[in-house]
Image (cartoon, each protein chain N blue to C red):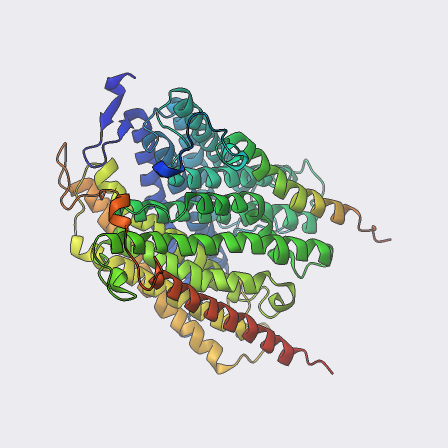
Length: 53
Length: 563
C-alpha cells in the first residue's frame, strides 16, 4: 500500500479494504464460490440424469 | 524476536527466519530436480510426435507422457509454489514461518509422493496420463502417491495462512499485506479448493483401485477431477502474476499503478478463476448448457478481465518507473532501455507477453462453447496450456529463481553469459511448441495419440500435409526448449554447488532497486498520458484478441454452414 492510500487513524476503514485484508473471509469465498457454482451444481446435474433401463 | 533464528539479508534488508529459509531452499531445490526429470520426459514426447523421428513405441509413449505431465504440471510447479508462498509470507512480512517442523512433514509427504509416483509410473502399469480417467485403472500406489503429495501441499498452504496470522499478531507490517504477498495468498486460497477437490475424487478412486468401491462414474470423475486438474493450473496463474509484480518492484523499484485495482483483480480470481474448469466438459452430454455457459462464458470472462487488468498494470508500473528514472522519450524508450540482459527481467517479460498473447487469447477461444468444438480434445489444448503453464508460469518461476539464488542461497550465479540468453532460448522454443501444437490441433490432430497415421490399425485418416509439418516444427521447438530448460537447470545447480559464496557482501549491481519516489513520478508521460506505451501495447493486444476471436467464429461458420 502506498503512503497516500493509508487512511487517517480516526477514519473508518472501507468495507472493501476490510474484506481484502481478511485472509480467512477470502479463503471462505475462494472455496465456497467454485464449490457451489462448479462442484455442487455439476454434481446435482449428473445425479439427476435418469438411469438407463 | 530470537535473533539467533534470524539473519538480515544484505541485499534486501529483510529479516530472514533461518528455519523457514531452509524449508524454502529444500522446496526450491526439489522443484528444479523435478523440472529436470519432467523436461527429459518432455523430450521423449516431442520426439515421438515428430513423425520423421517417432522415437518411442506406443506403450513407452504413454508412460513417458504420464510422467512428463505429472512431473512438470504438478511436482515442479507445486514444490516451487510452496517455496514461493513461504518466501512471500515469512520473508516479505519479516516474521517467523509458522511451525517449521510441520513444514518438514509436509515436504516429506510431498517428496515421498512425488518419488513414489515416478517409481510406480516407471513400472509401466500406470500409464493413464495425468488425467487418469476412469474406468482406465492405475496401480493403487499411483493414486496413493498423489494423495500423499496433495496432503503435504495442503499442510504447506495452512503453514502459509498461519504465518499471516503470526505476522499480524506480532505487528511485523503496517496496513495491508504487500501486493506480492496478497497474490501469493490468492494462490494458496485456490490451492486449498484444488487439493480438497482432488481428495474428493482421488480417495474414492484409490479405494476403487483396491476393490473397496465397486464403481466410479466416469462423468462424475471427469467433473470433479477437473476441479483439481484445472484449478491446479489456476494456482500457477496467481503465483506467476505475484512474481510479475515482485520483479517490477525489485528490478525497477516500481509501485503498482493502483493497489486497489490490482487487489480487486485478484479478488476476481478468488471468486471466478476456478470455474474455467468447465471448459474441459464443454462436449460432455451429461451437464447442461446453462452450467457450461455460466461457468465459462460468463464467470470465466470476469477472471479473464482480471488477467487483462494485471497485464495492463504490471507493464504500466514498469513504464511509469522507467519514465521516472529518465527514460521518458517517445512511446517505447522505457522498454528499449529495459535491462534485457538481466534474466530476472527478460524471463518475467517473456512470461507476461507469452501468457497474454498466446495463453490468454487462446484460453478464451477454448472457453466459448460454440467455438470450442473446433479444437476440443485436439493438440490445440496442449498448445494452449504450454503457453499458459510453461511460457507463463515456468518462465516466471525461472526468472524468480535467478533472483532467489543469490538472495536465499547466498551464492553468485555462474555462467552469467548463458543465463542472459537462457530465457530467450527457452521462450522461443516454447513459443514454437505452443504455436505448432495449436496449428496442428486446428487442423484436427488429436491430443493423447501416439501415431496420427494410425499405422497398423487397419484404419486411416488423411490429415493435411501441413499437420505433419506442424508436428515436425513442434519437434524442433521441443529440442530448442529442452536446451533452454537444461541450461536453466545446469546454471542453477552449478551456482548452488560452485557459485562464489556471497556471505554478507552485497551484490553489484544491486538485486533490489530503490523504490521510485512520488517526486520522481511527477511530470512523466507523453501527451497527458502517464503510461502511453503500455496503452499502445494494450490496444495491439485487444486488436489481436478480437481478430483471433472472430476468425474462429468465421472458421466455425465454414465448418457448419447455416442455410
